[in-house]
Image (cartoon, rainbow, N blue to C red; front, side, top):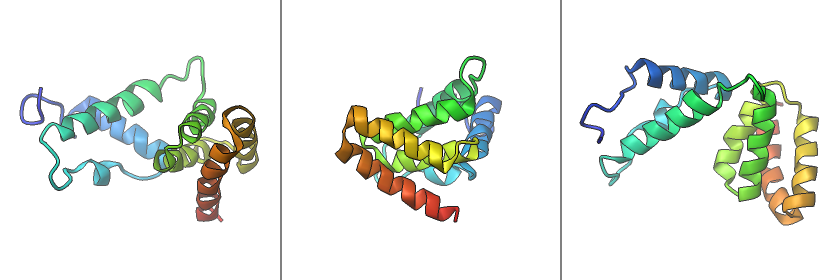
Length: 136
């Protein structure tokens, strides 16, 4: 299904709920990132919709066994370990918005340094200090 077919739009209740969940977690609306980029093929919109619905409509709401704060710290760990620094910025915001403390995030980076490497942890920690400064 391509964006021009019967793909859910922002007006679709499930997609709208995922976007609302993202706003609650991140503190801002995602729509500004979801528009077409110059030269992007038409199915790029499908990718963004599917990824948004999967993350914010399927995974994040699953709080029966793993609360949002814990899920956020796990997500910080994954993003930092993978070295995906811009997504890490969002995960750090979600962690702070979900009740994780700056001190808990520092402890997360200590654990990342022990198991994923000091260099990778330092790269991610630099992003964390920028996010901390946003909230100062």
